[in-house]
Image 1: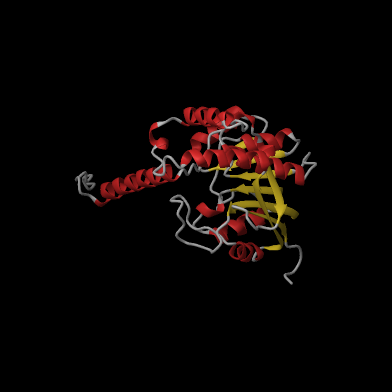
Image 2: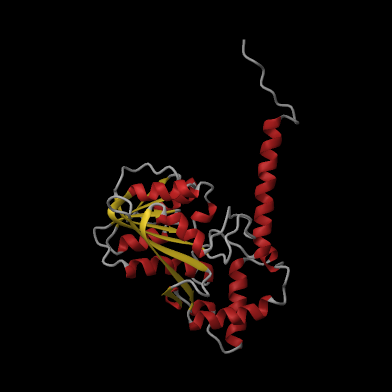
Length: 287
């Protein structure tokens, strides 16, 4: 005879579930008040989205031609980056843990293939990709060393990993962003990657002149709302239209005038909010 199911309100399982949900709500509220958007909508007036899109644009230009190259896009989200790379001729697989966004990406970008998959448990045979791109994923992963090992295993002998992660001046295991497990300094990121890759070069990025002027103008407006309450009561689209109106009144370009081309990339990391590691796989015995 089986044991009766325990449904007591104070059961450990129910308490644990409630605590998890409360934890998620607390993180979302903290993120909202800090202006953190881990999955910015594909809105061309959202500068976080343009920054993310520019990463795919830079990869496509830096590693062109992409035709016939096998590309893995880790944490591909809504799929626009995978779609861009596939449109340039690459054979692209995008992976993400979120089943909902995977379904949306499949419908929106049939030119690429999308799978629900954990980045630390890649279900691919060894050496099956020529290029792996990972934008703003590493800082979310508990077992970062295993992630790096899995990516290296999936890369061909002459394969390349291009990895983007926030730049912390000092490595921290308690970052302000509530979604991040840790954030890396240039030194700690290089040490992590050099354990599996023979060559690691670091690059940075920053807003080009037009985006920089727009951000300066918007920061002047944001100072009137130091608590970030606008993010709780004003929809993003309304905020962006209002911001564009204010910018035009100041004689600047509106948000609708910006594009992924308004971000510039350079070798080195000084004054960059992002670390970009270009990693070539180690070939032959370690030396």
